Image (cartoon, rainbow, N blue to C red):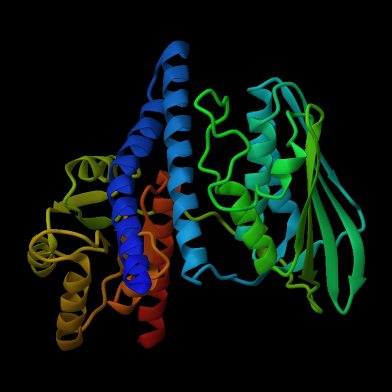
Length: 388
């Protein structure tokens, strides 16, 4: 019964995620496009507020999905060599603005002795620090928020780095400090509470820290603020991967125009994706379902297909498998990119195993979509040349 209930919960979360992401993709995308039009300052402020609200909703959905991944044991690290500086600068740019909107001053302090390159998961590190910084700014009404990074020690080719997030906010009562890392726990659950949230942010921080082999601790005094300390052991690469110096001297390639088939049944998303692509000079044809996509694929030559997964008549998985089978008989291989509201941890693998070349989850930003299209087509052309 417990296993059956857990499976039902996972399926429900996957369904709710899909159903919420689909309209959210339209809200975020259309609002972002509207900001590019000539509007007066008051309209621009309204659009900015709407975009921020939609982004907050998206983050809540992501927190719920990450919590499900943790419970199902599918929340894993993707280790790679990376530079700390770009991650920290991105956080600084984001949270300096967020703090400024509340008349708070954001400070970043980095120990000059920390390694420039480390091996770890930069995306989960950013997620960890983002959750802590978001909380710090949310619970601070005036004063300062600090992010400091220091080197504790270097031992066995690992750098033990301490990331500290300090605020001058409301603080956390001692009796609640032992519980705030538990799922869905909040300091104030009353109907008059001043701060929203799901109560999952610190739970995710706790799990990410443990996954990375680190420790998370808290110092807090009610009325004076809180400081979260995250100690992480990050491997130091024996040989730092060199940046490609030739890239700076290369001629920047102009984005090319492509003929793209969009298999998408949602009318709002059809309109949004068409606007995103046509604004970049691409030619777009829409298919309402997998069967229409197959018919269009047979009759006209496309450079790429954007494939939704859940569609009537024929879904994206079966459509892709059918296309790949026909290509096996007749030759050729068209790049297919999944553009789907399915965002559970197994969905990407399912898309790739069905024959798709790349996976994007909704809501997707216009710049990311356009960059991925260029990259996938370029990689496909490169494989074609190597085959010849």
